[in-house]
Image 1 (cartoon, rainbow, N blue to C red):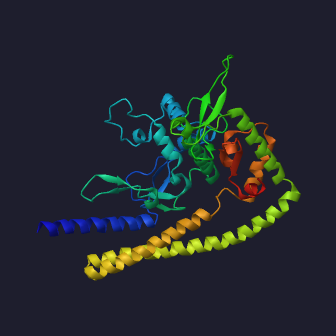
Image 2 (image 1 turned 90 degrees about the horizontal axis):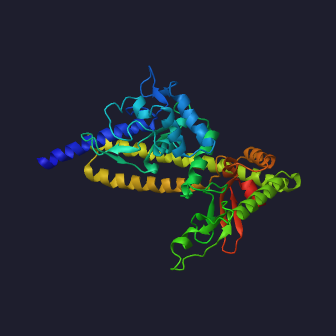
Image 3 (image 1 turned 180 degrees about the vertical axis):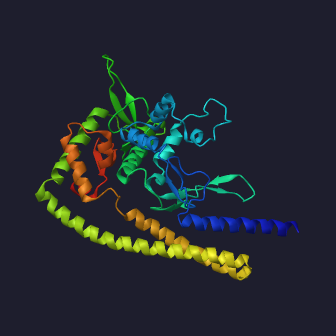
Length: 390
């Protein structure tokens, strides 16, 4: 008797999850509170609209990030100004006590800066309840989130969002908060692939004199893993800027540009077919997912026998998994959404116009810089057109 009751509870849980998942896939908002910066639509059910009361705070946070401010610095600024946190604003902090209650954190800022809700996309399923009877939730991997595009009005434009994402990601590769240098988070060891560490070896005058060294070598010197790669930060930065300038000038040279442009047109034509294939696979995945949901409902209502359900369910699930793997592969082959020829040209011109480039510009142009054992510098550009020249 106990087993049947447990099985019944399990079925109800699965049924509720299935219905919720279906609503999420349709881009309907089914959470309690929308993301900070949005509120529930006054009349339409399951829809969200911009909350003009706090939207300026969200826009300001993105603007501060674009200016090169770290998440920690943004949080400190908001706390100093006494700006209410999202939890305080929606009334969740009323009974909370403790040193951090009602304070902005760098983690909260980082999560906001990377949340696609602000692009107009519905992001749901980041956590899943263990059971409809329990309050406990499990965090889901990003690939299991349900993201539906263009479901509501965007708060942040695409270009700002992508630039901020690149700036946030570039900082993931550096632990140093002590020294600021142009290539921070962009420079890696060519041999072991790890980010370079930066050391300060000031001369007698006492001014900072930064050196790059391989972090792997630094940590495992006695084990003989990798080699030192020691080189002055200024030497590398100047060499990178000179190389980027050379590539940018060549890109704007009509004679050199013609064959590259022809190649870009050919690649663009192939990319169109690529898009159609991606869409076709996505449609098949959606169709299989709908089939799985329907089969589950048929199994619950007794229209489909348990044995038949298991056999068909596993086969369809395998088909869907292989399609999802193929989709991932195709999407990874797609060039970056920022790599359009016009955008490349605009960034190139900006770089050439500035005497000494900003981090924002450099992060927009360069994916990473690698330093080899024999002091050779390898630059990986974000744009295929620039990569072709380099």
